[in-house]
Length: 192
Image (cartoon, rainbow, N blue to C red; front, side):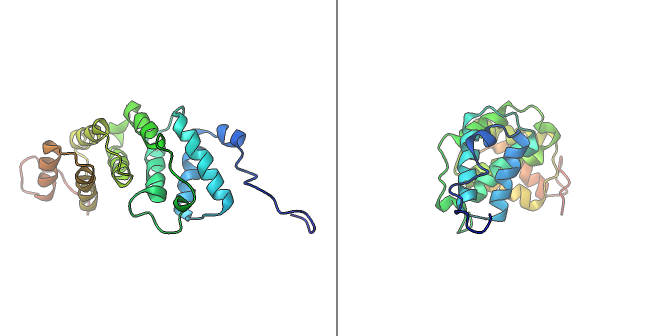
């Protein structure tokens, strides 16, 4: 801004047209950065609103990493344990955003290649107090079938996510117990 020019009004770079033109990766990256940096200016709040509106349309084809990052960002902004001072105080989460993302997660067929990301997505949904039986069933089945080597914290977080959402999966809990008991038949090695 040059000396004597008026202060800009509104978020100049966060126009609806610009956000509508963003590739899915850029939408995920922008939302993740906004949550990670914990910035809450009018510009960031405006951008976050527009990004969430774009997510609500459910028309983007995210990669598994991007889906997990978006849900993680939403949980960081709006979920239980969100840091004070986040944009959640000025930006509300539209009710249809998380269900749209869960639908996207359920359509993805490549979770078996990255079960940790699906476990992370389930934990993020739990922080957002969103329980989707199909998604949590998919997470349980995928993690168990992939013989995923989650860290002890990762297993505990996944079990807590099931508990918070009041979903119970006996097979997941049995699998988790074998993870913590290295001498049990069928145990899965755990990362430190």
